[in-house]
Image 1 (cartoon, helix red, strand yellow):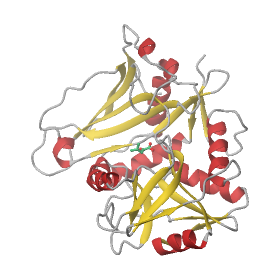
Image 2 (image 1 turned 90 degrees about the vertical axis):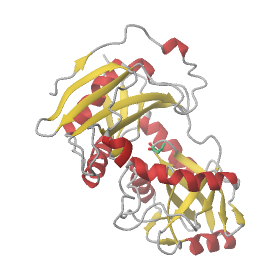
Image 3 (image 1 turned 90 degrees about the horizontal axis):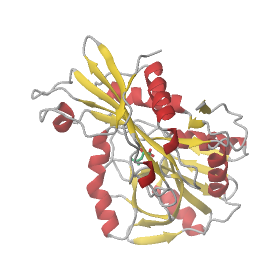
Length: 356
Ligand code: COI
């Protein structure tokens, strides 16, 4: 067991939060977990303390050379009041894959899970039970050493804070196929959940928003012909004949936990899951011919978010409205019930944190 020092907040901000109107990322719960890393010593000084500002050197490596990465997770409550996490081992694995790519230290499973468990037991009252809401968890790591020479930092911080939140997208999403800017190229950091990937996407996303869309549909960095993912989520397309199409996980695409879970359940439900390079033309042609039934984004924050419009070369392709029997609606309902402990966890995906 890792040793975690605990300093509880003397007061509570819980009563200031309107749990019926959470939004996404507007509130931060009472405590945070912090661990320090020093080369030669490893991870140490693990602690839970009140959520508060950090004190950092202005020369801190993350701020100029971008050694920073994160994960996104959600905690739910079951009827017994226990806190549930969905496939946390997958987040631990991906965090460490990102860390390796960014020359940052990895985190043991014991530290990853021990930190979450301790924090969630302390902040259990912050896990919402209102419909569509959950406690969004943000584990992240960054270089904290004061450096000027370009080299990996010798000191890091690993922090987890959380935010009681509701839906990320509260209406179907309009996406525009990106034909100019590039999110990731082979050999780059596209598969890693590093901060720079998100920073670099802000400008093209703002351009898409200015043009009346909500998000970008990223394409390959070479020819802009193949669909990769959308900002904040992986993307999937449902075609007539019970087919689900999605781009394969590669060096340029984030290995989404929601993505892989949906594909596995889709297969179990009898869908043909096709994970192959997916050209924009194939999707547009299918939309044109009426074969494209649904398009949706899949992610932790986004859950399953319907795509209503695909903008491509100045034309908008409107997708059919989803109904209760649409795959995306059914898989969303299934995943939400699973994550809240309302149906049997046949895959052993749920980790229960006993709160009593
Ligand atoms: C998530 O889905 O958890 C993400 O990290 C995406 C985003 C909100 C940046």
